[in-house]
Length: 109
Image (cartoon, rainbow, N blue to C red; front, side, top):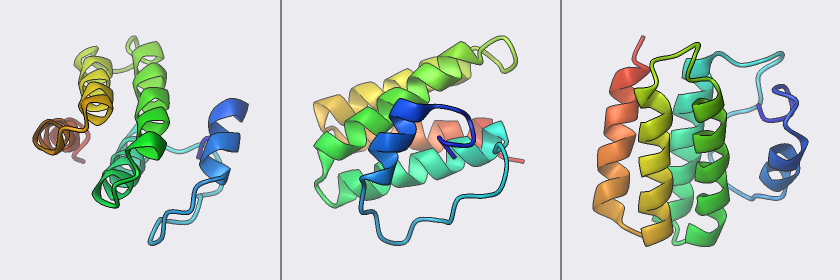
């Protein structure tokens, strides 16, 4: 997804991850919802495996991307992704779960 969004730094970092059970990259640019859900799932899987140092940059890229897209989306999405990123940085599983749940509600179709 990062490659489809023309995000080379994010794409390189994501390509280096070994996250079992992840979905295959879709053809073309993903929707905001697909990116949000896939990104949240990746961050959660990495954190659950104790790979906080891998989860943090992924959460940071998501926060940056959704902050930049705040004019197309409700601005709370970017703030919520920043909260997800902060929870990962703090290695706080409860906060991570709360932000992930809230983001899923925002992007529920």
